[in-house]
Amino acid sequence: MSPLSSIAALLPLAPVLPLAPVVPLATVLPALMFTAGIALLTMILLRRSYGRLGARKRADVRPIATLPRPESEWSGVQHDSVAQVERAKVELHEVGREYMGRIDSKLIVLQELVTRSQQQIDRLEELLAEAEAVESRSNKGTK
Image (cartoon, rainbow, N blue to C red; front, side, top):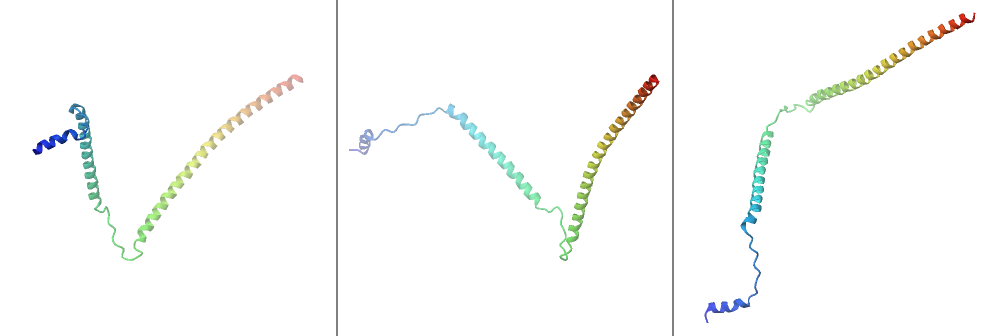
């Protein structure tokens, strides 16, 4: 008995495995190309972002301004006090502007009220003059 005949004899006894269905390349190719395009786009964008981050880190290494090393423990206080005084000036200026705005708005309202009251005074004087004229006419007519 030859070895091939013994293998051929065992083949019908082996369980039959179902074969995977054959998918035509035309149905798989668009999905495969889409996936490859997304992967390529992701790779390009990641390289650009890493390049920008690296350039930003390299640019940040150099100091913008250097301060001299303090000669004593009180030498830096002068810089801080000047900054504090400037901040206080700015805050006072802002508060002053706010109060001036409030005062200006109240003055405008007050001027409007004075104008209205003057108009009412003028109207009352006219009515009083008319009333006196009517009274004098009625007194003349009764005499």
